[in-house]
Image: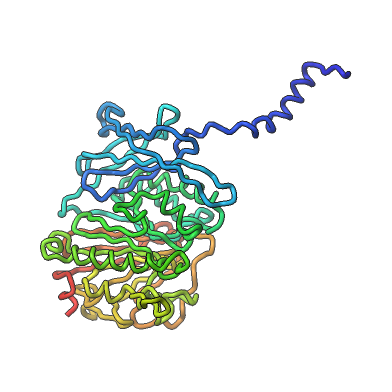
Length: 440
């Protein structure tokens, strides 16, 4: 037999080390992909994160400036096995923090004695109907070319936003589940500091939206697919436009959402509710109008989202008439990799309040499409001959901002990332009257 010198023996062990390591699973108790959401109940914030091993679900927190981590809350973890080829297991932790003081700032970390996250901070939402919440909103921010991400990270950490609305399409690819982790790690630098409110897009459809439904924690009991919540003088409704396109996952979702929507809008329109939250704002991934040149649903007069589908039994109703009937003020969309602002529009016609001040007492809902935050497919091209309802268009990468100032005034603007954060478009929507009667 050949005698090995100690040095050779050590080298041989080193070469074998990767093989030995592969056989031993790593200790995956470290929290990652931390994000906040608003639970819909005043004075609450939900903290959601992932570990790959089972651990306790704990958040330690304190008021900014108080003794660090003097409060704690316990939640629960659910096992989620993604449907990819690796059948990767993960534990999704959810902890609800309660009794938060409106507009107070808190410091927190999450995890367990087996591993803690970084220390983050957030400001509790001010539920007062007289507050003026500020939003950033966009869709289609993938992780291969997340062009607007750096600017959004900095602005969020500077405290410019109370809430972020991500209007669908988080993952650049429907199929590479690993990118879902990458994306969730990337947005932690925004979503761990402000509530990150979402709706599903077509890229979330993989395995019947299972990643989306399991990994986000939106209000209500509908697996984050559709829900509503209140902030300032606004009632905000998030929907899934995807129910119109993935009928193989069951048509019942389409009808269930419509039924839920009608109830929700009816409730929001009760005079006592509309008096304190006059603005009704919707967000959904695929628009019902757009002037892009890509044959998407919104480029056709017979848009499913707008008019519904006749090939289902019974025929499925679209959303335009429902939203019009209940006086929805502003509709936010994405999916098209462009920015487009519409004149107030209904039934494929523009209804300006007046020629000089089109958004003062407009006679129909105002639509904004903002799907150019950054995606690997580049921005889309526009149809050179848009219809009369198209007011402003840009193919720059960028994102939108909104402030619900009070019950009569709402401000929106578009930021171009290509032009170093320049505001390239802005409007004030002014309404002295809300609800269906405002149109007539």
